Image (cartoon, rainbow over all chains, first blue to last red):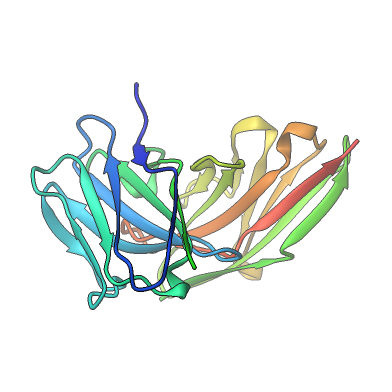
Length: 117
Length: 112
């Protein structure tokens, strides 16, 4: 079974530029999550999708971050404009259905490491 | 609200020695507790979880954790460290929803 795919693996940009990350979840997984992992901290949930609808985006900085999952499969996370403090690893995860995060059915991608200079 | 505190951002042990990684939690509801491992340049992988069944939970790679309500702890242990155990370990808590709250992580180094 293929895992959660993310690209690019690394991205370096200057502040005030825009950047986009892509995630393709495990086939058939309805729920998709984006996490932000700042160096020295644990992952923090930014947004959760159920199919193509948003379930939780309470911690997404909506003035600069946006995310979409138009067809309920792959997803993009965008930052515009980027700030220095956005430097982090952005992790995508997926699970088959809501509530599956509390068992063994939550799977993480390898992440995109963003450096904002 | 839920939170976890991991004591010690770095832990170093010799190969064959006991591994003990500490995690204390706070939760207003019965918690679900997790340990995840992250190897370099990889995503997080679930080691084990506690969901109110047995208080001693066995996970993959010889790791186990014990839920102690009186101490609000969920420490991770392994009797004998292996070089391949070197990684970052995250404790996480959930109130039964999909929202996992992660600790700040503990980097485990294993010396030969």
